[in-house]
Structures are given as C-alpha cells and as structure tokens.
Length: 479
Image 1: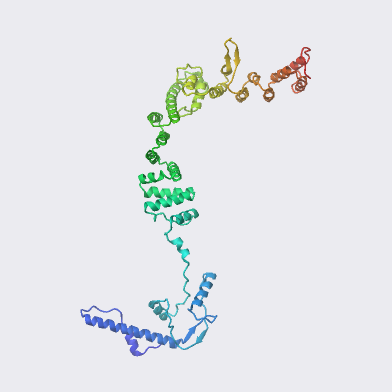
Image 2 (image 1 turned 90 degrees about the horizontal axis):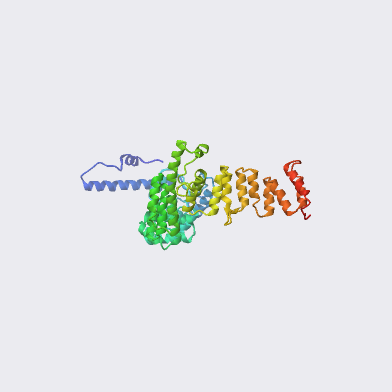
C-alpha cells in the first residue's frame, strides 16, 4: 500500500497524546483536528483495500460468506469437526466494489481490527443456546424444582430460600418426595439458618420431619440439643432417657454410680424407672464385690481364687454375668451378703428358669455334681425326694455333656426324660447303655433288645446284662 508524501508526514507527526496546555480553546481545536485526521485515514484505508482486493468472498456452495445460511452451516460443521480450526480457501468472484450496507453485530473497534490486521480469520458466530440449557447455571428454582435437583444429584442451592415461608415450603416439598436424604439435607440447612425455638415450633406439626431430625441429632451426638427439643415438646420421658444415656460417657465407676443415683429423680415411665433403679443397685453391688474379691484374691485366703483365678473385672457387667460370677465364686453364702446368689436372685427378680440355667452352668463348670443334684432335688410333705425342673431334662443333659459330666451323672438325668423315643435317642448319642437296656426291658421289647446286644462289645458288662434279661423266664415279652 502506497501513501502520498503529505499523508506520511501527517501520519508520523500525528499522535493521540499531547502536552499539557492552559489554553482551553486551543485544546478543543487540537482534538477536532486529530479526529478529522483519523476519519480521513480510515476512508483512505477502506478505499485502498477495495482497490487492492475488489472481490466478494463466497463459500463453495455459492453462498456469500457472513450470510445467515452460511453461519448455520459453518456452525454445524464446526460441531462435527474434531475441534481443530482449519483455514479454508474461498473462490473469488469479481463484482463491483462495494461495502456491505446491511447492519451487522460487529462493533466499530472489531471492524478497525479486521481491516488493520489481514491475518485475522473470520468465523461464523455461535448460535445462542436454548433457554432451558441455562437452567443449570442459575439458582432461580422453585422448592419443587430444587427438591427434584437434589434427588437427581444435580447442582442446587438452598441459600435463596431466605424467608420462613419459603423454607417451610421447601421442607414440605422434601417430605412429600419421601426421600430421607433430601429431608435431612433441608433440615441441616434449617438448623443453621433458623433459631432453635422457631425450628422446634415448626417441627412439632411435621411428624415425619421431626423423626428425621431426632435421628440426625442422635447420629451426630447432639445430646444437649435433643434434650432441649424433647423439653420444648413436653416429652419428659424421652428427655429423661436422653439424659440417662449420658452415663455411657462416664468412665469412672464411682462417678457413674453417682450419676445414676441422680437419674433416679428424672421423670421416667414406670418401667424405665425400674430399669434405672436396678442399674444403680447392680453397679453399687458390683463395686463392693469387686473391691472385696480383689483383696481376698491378692491375700490368697480363698482356694477358689487360687484354683480358678479371675480373668476379668465384674464391674459394669450384665446381671446374668454377675449371677454366674456369684454362683462360681460365692456359692453357698448366706442370703444376707451382697455376693450371695440367692440375694442377687431375690433383689433383681430373676426367674426360676434363668436362675437354674445360670447356676447349673457355673457349678457344672466346677464339676460340683453334688451341687447340681441339689438344684433339682425337692422334698414333699412326706419327706420323699424327687427331682424336678422348670426346664426339660433333655436340655440339662446337653449342658452336663458340654461340661464333660461322667456317664453315671448323664444316665441319671437321661432317665428323667419323659418321652421314650427322646430318651433312647439321647442314651444312644451319649452311650448310656444301661438306660437303653432298661428301657427296652420295661417296654418288653425282646427284638430290640436282641438287636442292641449285637451293638455292644461281647463279654462286656452290658452284654452280660442283656443275656441275663433275655434268659429271665418271668418276663412276658410282647414280641
């Protein structure tokens, strides 16, 4: 591009910056002069560009570049392409020199840049996206839309719900969606953004949300807030239970005992009050028994502790474990002592069946078979003794066998089983030969007795006993 000499001088001597001057009139005149020069330079630039390139660009399909149809096709092709923009060559069709008269979306600055920099490439403008696609980038959602987005795992915001009415509508929508995770998320937001008095008041009329909130507070360990919630709802029994639960956090036994003692004044239901009273009484006794047994064991005064050293402390153990410990180490003590099995049975109202099973396990472990017999032996008013049990004797046989009771002890209790088939089955299982032989004899079943003779060792005492019964002519067999 060639410029005339005067134009070159004006170009190199002109500048948009000027020195400071106090003359206002001169300053305005200078601005006007510079503006005129800029317009003239643009006009000459456009004319020279038109003279140099007197063409109009069209695409391969014959459509003018920049038209609407060309823009749409270019957009579709750019979507299908791999993302790499490639420069395309366009055929040139000579037409009369002219500038586009239609208005475009390009600014004046972009027009200057396009004329001044020939390396700039023109691309089709991107079409506007549908309005629905912009929903993910705005937060103007209704409570129903917000809940749906939460269920679908999409981006959501609860901060826009600022008024109490909007927050309650959001909570109601979450409850209607029957989604526990959404309900909990909304409740967490309400817990942060509302005072506890207002939140408690609104939850009273929303039972489902209230249950979720109580569960959430239990999970995060907000015991103090739970107590306040129950107190505001006049649920004194639940409040008392929550306070009682704090005993789990007390490690020292003496402090825990004192804490339980204070709990006795809480407004529990009758059943819960009995439970708390038993808990306090049990811990109080365990502390006394533990201190006494530890001293006796260290002094070596009792043989039971020498032969069977204690493996663990009795503190904070359940009532049945405490009873088992008492039957193991303190069996036979008078009822007046705290460690006596009979005293524990009476104090904590332990049933006959539970007491018998626990005591039987402890005494069978020690191989104290005389004590085992004493558990089941009773006397009638005539002085006759008989074995009775609140549980089936077949269960007693199983317990005795697990504790390696001798065959003679097992036979005594197998004989007490009333059902004949069950008795024979147990006798065969635990090899109680005398029980089987005597049962077949009492049944007068000669054939079964002959069959069983073939199962015992020939020449043994059981074999000779069967031979003796079979040769007895006074017995009347049924087969």
